[in-house]
Length: 93
Image (cartoon, rainbow, N blue to C red; front, side, top):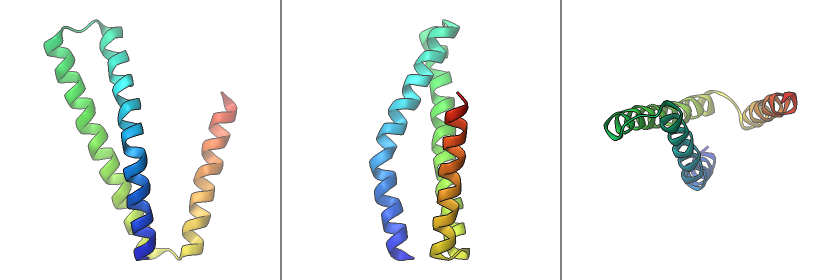
């Protein structure tokens, strides 16, 4: 289980900058679409950044709790189910 936690930590460290960049682009789009002044744009970006940080923390906590309950095989099955679901939604577009 420790190896899985290390692998998760390393993978999160690798993708977090990418997710943050994608999220920054999304907040920029929102600010531009709503034509917010600088003060309000900063407030909206802070709210969205705070939410994103909390969301990532909750995802990590969920993963850790599931990892404590499920076997390695079950965790692999769960990940496969998630990937299949993502592919299904991606194919619908």
